[in-house]
Image 1 (tube, helix red, strand yellow):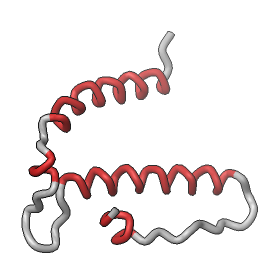
Image 2 (tube, one colour; image 1 turned 135 degrees about the vertical axis):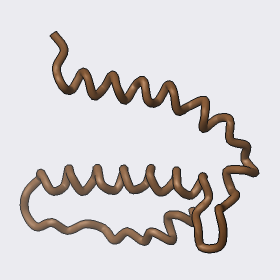
Image 3 (cartoon, one colour; image 1 turned 90 degrees about the vertical axis):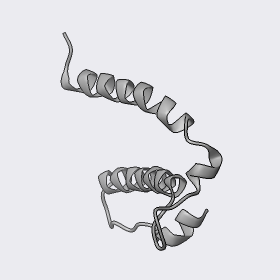
Image 4 (cartoon, one colour; image 1 turned 120 degrees about the vertical axis):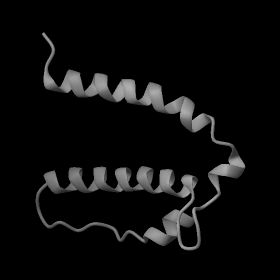
Length: 82
């Protein structure tokens, strides 16, 4: 019998399978293009989503440890540039 976690895992697996070829089809040059001044490139957006997810994962885990909630600073422009 499937449960909600199994459903979410299956949905995520399908999403990754569908998305991977689309990401791989973007050339390196196109990955750096922006839509205009002040906007992020596709590569920067993907990097932001990745580092944001990792930073939030750490925050969620630390919050469950109890005690004082002290998180490292997050310098978004620095991370986007890297």
